[in-house]
Image 1 (cartoon, rainbow, N blue to C red):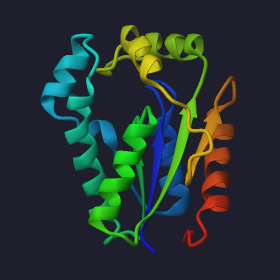
Image 2 (image 1 turned 90 degrees about the vertical axis):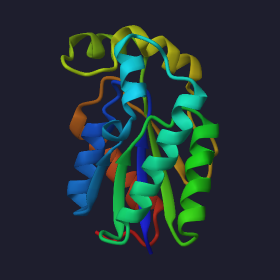
Image 3 (image 1 turned 60 degrees about the horizontal axis):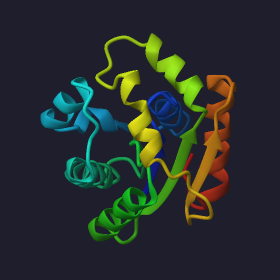
Image 4 (image 1 turned 60 degrees about the vertical axis):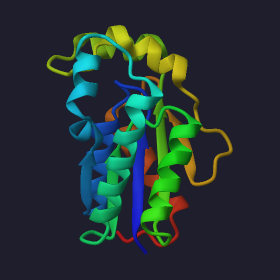
Length: 180
């Protein structure tokens, strides 16, 4: 059965790192969500302007369709995408179901303390998402609680490897037909 695993959370939580690790462990394709932001979104974020819902809908739809299409080549696809709140996660589920009602969708939401993420983002170079914009993401963030096919992983001071292992374990426990 085709499966999309979405690794989400606010910027600086390690979505891309965990997503790449998962895709390597599962021997499947990884889709970096940031690579599919339209130029207008990247320009806004580069200027320190937070994205609105209207900025995100088209990106989320395009990204979900790309991931769904990729399941025809690789039965399992891992994608990184902020999916900060429930309405975005519900939208992703809706788009995936329209594209292919047989797709299994599983979401792993990474989150951490504001201060830890802020410090981490302040040190990274060359990314369009600046630490000054983190507050807007925390304002919009809704950590999944009791959402079907979604788990939340608190990162705290865990190592990258510990978080990656926890994400892989969550995928294995929650996706019955996961092909590894």
